[in-house]
Length: 371
Ligand SMILES: Cc1cc2nc3c(=O)[nH]c(=O)nc-3n(C[C@H](O)[C@H](O)[C@H](O)COP(=O)(O)OP(=O)(O)OC[C@H]3O[C@@H](n4cnc5c(N)ncnc54)[C@H](O)[C@@H]3O)c2cc1C
View: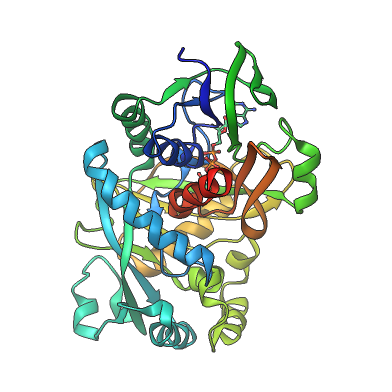
């Protein structure tokens, strides 16, 4: 190993990889230390949906735009396929349409547009006759995370010279010494990107941020439900949920409408995102249950709520071929950067937006660390 390193990054999820890229671009010698033999956390369990429209106004929205641009720049060189572009947000009722109209007229609605009835009918896989309208956002990208994260890892190693140390748990961080299950690593600076592990490193500091964890249920459906030219789909429950719509006129009325019509889905934190993979299958989800110690059990009733929502907008809901859970750290703000010392930072994405914002957050962390 090329010790000592300029920087060690703990965690090989998207947050850690984004920091490795930002450090490597600055010419720094970088090592990524990961407890598991591959990244198997939230970063490969998600939709791979790089979402701009709907992100919280201000820093989060700006970070999503910057991160989307970085995904677009690196996808080709890293061999990552962009499997979908843009997003269609479906208005299943007039209250949702009112919020989407307000969004379109907001500065965050730049380049988004409401589709005409004939444009909606173009999407023959959707139950368009049931819809009051739809907003097309051109800003989104989608990658297949289970492939994209290993591809990004390989590219960082081969093209940028980043060292990866797998199957290695970090026990303590006191630069230049990092004590791990494989011995001591030497690095001048350290960035800790631990995902939803809030107990191994600096738990006393993390306990001050009012953090908890969020468990989500996801499914993959067989091919045949979504056609190749359909963008990523979000339904009205997503408009209720995503923070970027919360300030808009009509949002309270939408919430009341969904509490009346979809109370079980709201109670389970269910909303619908449906994205298409290259083989025609689709990932659909998800649900949100908040607890400090998420249980490992998939609730069939919650999956049913997600499939019911899918069925309400798609003409065909193919059989489920895979089910899984994911978990992320959740907190009052969209992310946390904790300054442990002059040379150590902890970075947590606390809003389920890491695929969409990590690249920009990594640039900010390194500016904070090195100027
Ligand atoms: C089901 C689901 C769907 C989602 N959908 C989307 C989406 O479509 N778009 C979006 O933007 N975001 C989405 N998210 C959120 C996004 O996936 C997360 O915000 C992001 O993956 C967090 O990345 P991370 O690197 O911080 O965490 P992780 O991917 O969990 O990685 C953290 C890594 O740190 C390692 N680690 C922790 N402690 C140590 C230690 N002491 N020593 C060594 N290694 C350690 C862990 O083993 C782990 O591999 C979703 C999340 C889930 C769960």
